Length: 84
Image 1 (cartoon, rainbow, N blue to C red):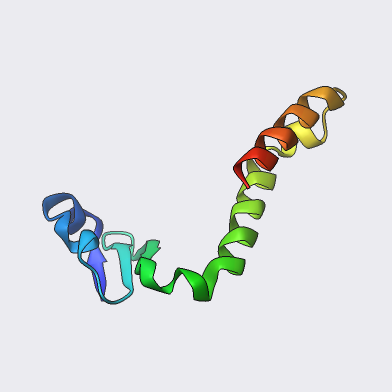
Image 2 (cartoon, one colour):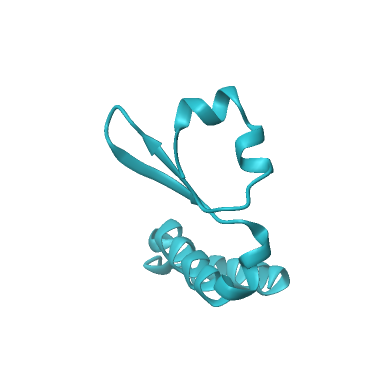
């Protein structure tokens, strides 16, 4: 099902009671913004989610990875280890 961003804002129940994959699209720009997958399928995509989260973390922390202060990076890595 393809849903516009403003439809989610008007009717948030659309994503709380899903039984199919929902593609959230900015219809003005014809641009896909998000994909909502029912939680019941989490076991099928768990490994992919971990990889996606890791890639997002790398992107957010690129500056720290290139930093000359490794102690900052060590603190971040320990924080991630606690969450995993």
